Figure 1 (cartoon, rainbow, N blue to C red):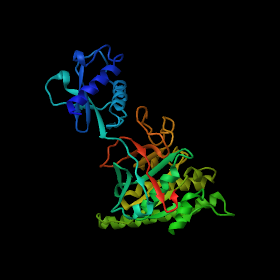
Figure 2: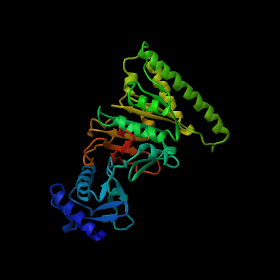
Figure 3: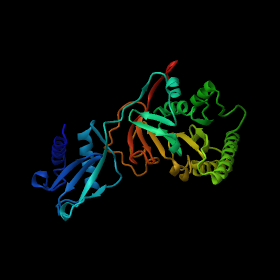
Figure 4: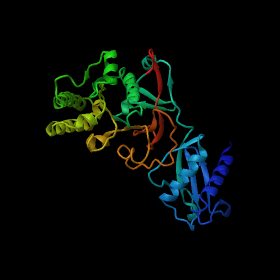
Length: 358
């Protein structure tokens, strides 16, 4: 399909879909047009117009165009109308609504042997999907959220396998479940509940380890002060089911846990110390707000709606985002200088181990 044919197809879709909103105006009456660009398309209204150009119109165009262009293009959802100024002296067409896109759709990675795949990765790259790769040098902290049975632990195991070759790991497993078994198989120590010990005692042990990490951050900061270009080995603190740690423990110990977690997340970025947090939800009872604001890789798996996305994606209305059906699907947002800021549909990798699919 040529660019001209794509423009005509898109205009036809908008004419039919926007009929009631546009007060009878359409492209046939020269009320608007659209222009295909390399990284998206422009909706160009010719003003003055009898319709209001606002967020509602922008989101309506998004819904129509996203469905019409799927699967050739994936439109990137915006929180508000994205205005673009045009280089022209004609005041009637000096502005347009821009709709950025990615060519194609999200495609799942299928990995025949996870151990071999992770050993063959070069540098600090972590493949997420066929068209999406994460540079761990640019990661501050990662969050994985989802309902029970949505595939959180499956996604976590994938990250653990990729991280074991590029980062030292400290694993906290309140459930004494999949992460503990994975760590045992790879000779990595785990902090987990033990018989005849209270929950408060367990969280106190975690606080001691976080305090040690905080001391390491301070030591690394002193090195960076003298040599700003010094490269440190990555250290990742992995905490499964964070909510299980903050519920039902002594208030003093919980406050200490939140304080240490906050300091590690705020100060760890420059010193290559990261958090990988997994929980069913990330409200203020699970982690402090300042920790949530430091997260720059956000993953929500399972059921996607306004209620489930309200903590990791508070400004997002997921309506119109095409999310494939199946296990390990959801949304991902990577906040760095390489990826589009917008939320993308996610298909977590399917992988096989020597014992079969995990």
